[in-house]
Length: 105
Length: 435
Image 1 (spheres, chains in turn yellow, brown):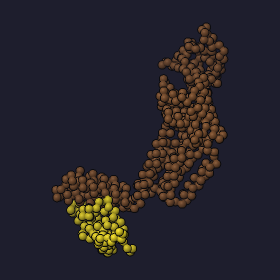
Image 2 (tube, helix red, strand yellow):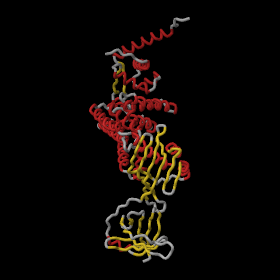
Image 3 (cartoon, rainbow over the protein chains, first blue to last red):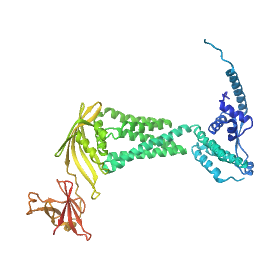
Image 4 (cartoon, rainbow over the protein chains, first blue to last red):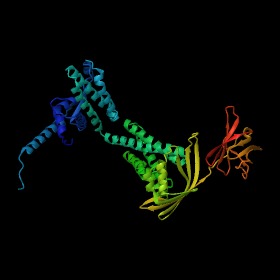
């Protein structure tokens, strides 16, 4: 699989999934991202193989008198991509907090 | 726990409406996921007793994102652009064509613009049907789009061609250009080749056809429209400052023409069309001869009247624009056609008639109905008027050949012929039946 470079919002979504937030509205609440960003990103991430989805068991949901939800979770590739992205953003944070060297007068 | 229907219905309606824009293969899943999120979210809010205005607004913000979600579907952006453009082109083309159709073609009675406007209306409807097909991802989507694109190109190229030149280049650009874009998007090489052929042949004709004739005729058309709409600014542009005209006993200039337009109201029933036009161009000068057909409804009886006139117009080209320099207009009698009716009905019309200007007798001469002018003792006499055959246009309407004269026999409630209306040079004169 080709190396995946995650955007900041995609990293936030994967981070939410890694922490057990499994469905769209939950991810929105925890990341603060709007639904117009979260759902298209989940679809894109699923297509690139870093996320997989499954429908909640119908019988369980029916027993609870509510419709079944669609749950998302990280794949192995997703975990690797997330760890690479977090490393990259941490390095970036380190670079940005250092005082820049003055090259001109 | 059961949810209050009102609480969730509006959110679900919105998602349902949005789902229609989702590609068909993903539609069911997409809708199910959103509906489940909404219902579950509301359920949690109700359970925690936190279903208030703030939480509802917050949920609306979340649900509104469904529209962005829909727009981000692969291929959806192209589809939306196509649907939007299809609708826009259909409305633009359709409204112009309906206006042409209802104002000029139906009342003007000209065949070529009638068919062209009808064709543009059909293409506009096809654009809408194509947009619906794209929206619904119908199996006929591709065929519909390609047929619409090809038809739009053919109709617009034909409409722009001389000698009629009914359409401007902007219409050609929008109609034919967008038709081509639609076909290119749907990538069918053989159709692209067909379209290239369809475009190439008329374009070669355009390049060989002298352009000034079409330009002059278009200026004529614009002038007629400005005259009908009493468009002073446009008339000022299209008519040269030195303009002179003669018509019967009248002579005038640009000032008197503008004064006429300013002081007379628009007649919504009036149409002006030109027939048998011929154009001769020499450099920056052009002469147009033609026949003007003027149709309007009469105020007294709401019947449509037609008046014909021959005209000669001189145009000059100044700053790349043709302007009317001189005009001569001469009215001509309407062309009438006799129809075959049962001559038995002539017996009803035979008799003597009296009018303020002259008296006449209607007699039968075999199978013919004749009007014979009578001598009168007053100063107004009919002396010198030869008898004329009354040729039938219908059972009650007759005309005299070679003269702008009509005789219409009128009956009372009992069916007896009591008088006749003589329509001479457009004026109605009542002739009472004496015997």
